[in-house]
Image 1 (tube, helix red, strand yellow):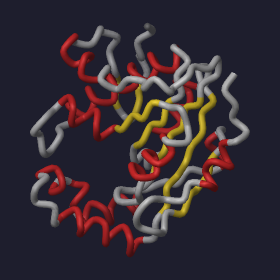
Image 2: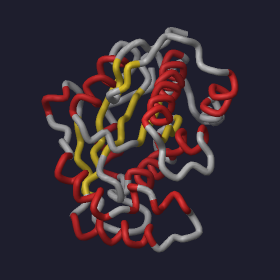
Image 3: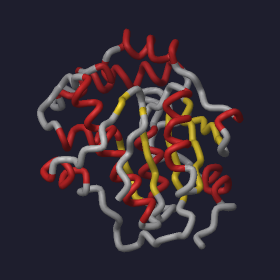
Length: 219
């Protein structure tokens, strides 16, 4: 495996081998039996603001696309259980190990769906530069109107059974700040981009996305 040396998501990584205990947790993200391999695997980056429905849409797509689903939040929670507010070092460790795992999967020919906010153009640019030689990269932005974002946020704040919902993802002021700082992807990304309007609750209609991805064929 080639270890990542680049600055990704604002983190400068060393080339040291990850700890076995940490790597084992990240490797829990494994392909299912129905995920085939390709010489040019699809790497779909699903981005958008908190509450836009990224996770819901990504999980719906897994039923249509034979891919491995990777979530920034899921990786972080697997590495640091019972942590409510993640510090800078924990965030850096999360991204470092997650990108190593994605690289490992793509090198084996597995398609990957990566879900996270990725609200800065520089972060997306770094991911594209890192994996452009290994995969067919595309960006799917999940867009939702502000009123629905706030509605979903308030529902999360009521979920007292899950202490993680009182973190920044359940903070209205931080959501507003995220909306101000968010840089939506566009044609300048250098890869195909689709904006999907997730305006309904419940199971999303992914037919538009599937049609957009039809040109991608397993080799």
